[in-house]
Length: 451
Image 1 (tube, rainbow, N blue to C red):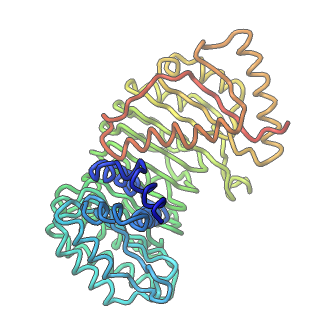
Image 2: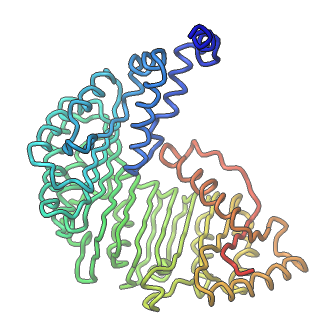
């Protein structure tokens, strides 16, 4: 026992001052702009694990209010599958008067959440609303009463946020059936748009299939709140291009927009001009440039464009390739401030790819990367392998740019996905000016090729 006590007294961590330990723990439990429930669970358990190491660490965690400002509310104990409100109150107490980030998650077991649970949570939040800077609600469980419960939470929690003068970001992860009625979506955005500093909206809607005859955005009253948002993230299963273009046009003050749509029916060709947008991320199985005649983004600095295979493209219902690179290059040429271009495509013809990498507009961009990955289908893999070898031969003979490299190792692609892509778009959670862009060579990646 004496030797154990001596080792503990002379350990490196024991010699660290409490202030430094608190900074280390803060890095461990910080939300870092996370949006997924499982990531919030990690921060929750990290805090409890740190407290269980020793008395010194527990005292540091308990005494520092910064370690209690990211709060997850969910059914913590399996035998008591209702929101663990006493622990929620404890976190609020230990955070003292610091700004709060709150995540309420009720998926998987939401059928046992009764209306009184939401009312009690709303009352507690209302008392602390002036401290809340970020609020997230995950309510996508498809139970018998989930629509009513989630809608009750959305439209009634807002009434308790009247004093949320610090609230800057809201994130809703919902069922599509909740918002299929356009009036519900309008009510939701209108209510929260009344909060003065709230400019960051994320709508992650599971199972929302908007048909061509359902004008989810275009039929709301003209006093719609879309122009308020500076940062908008929309994740839906299907939406007509007319709805999407209308939304982009109405977000006249947005600086960051993320669009994730599995199926984007091309219902019209509409010119689109957006003068404030500085970062755009589009992920879809349909050629986005096929729906706009003229996409003009003069202040765009970061652009990520991803095309992927899904059940629609596999069945031949949509084309997951860009058959003509000209519209893409035209948009790039109308964005003179572009600093980062990330293109994730499945197929491109050799001619189009050579045109792309040799274009003067592409050569001037500090960071430009093309990813060709996840080639799960033999016909696509063989095709890409063929023109990749031809293209590399042409580059060796007369490369269009000394900055161009071809990399065909899957591990490198994985690093790019989790490293560079994440790096540039994580920085956009804060101010774009914080992004320090380092020039890189033009890289073309391909993975999944047969040996």
